[in-house]
Image (cartoon, rainbow, N blue to C red; front, side, top):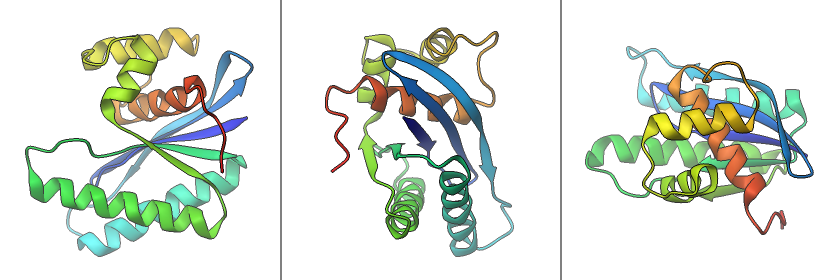
Length: 160
C-alpha cells in the first residue's frame, strides 16, 4: 500500500511516499514543495495543493496521511497552515484519495513510542524504520515520512 505523508507549511511542505508491505516500510520518494515568499499567499497555497495532487497521481497512492494543527503559538502562521491543509484535502478529494489527519503527538507516539519525543529522535527513528543510511533531509521531508509511518502503524487502516 502506497501512502503519501504530508507535513504542511506555507514556505515548505514536506512530502514522502512510503510503501507499506505487511509490517515493513519501504521509502519510495520524498522531498519538499517550496513556495516563493514574494508570491501572494493564495498563489502559494494553490502551488502546494497542485504539487501534492500531482505527487499523489504520479505515485498512485492509496491514501494520504497529513500532520494536523494541534496547537499554535503563532496564530497567523497556523491560519496559513490550516488553509494549506484545506486546499490539499480539496485537491485530493477531487482525485478520490482519502486523507487521514494526525496530530504531532500521534505521529511522535507512532514513530518513537513517546508522544513528546524531540525532533531529532523522530528523525532517527524514521531513518531506522525505513532502513535508510542517513536521516532524510530536509526536516520537513523527514516529518512527512513520519506521518506516513503513523498511518501505517495505526491500528485502523480503513480508508472509508
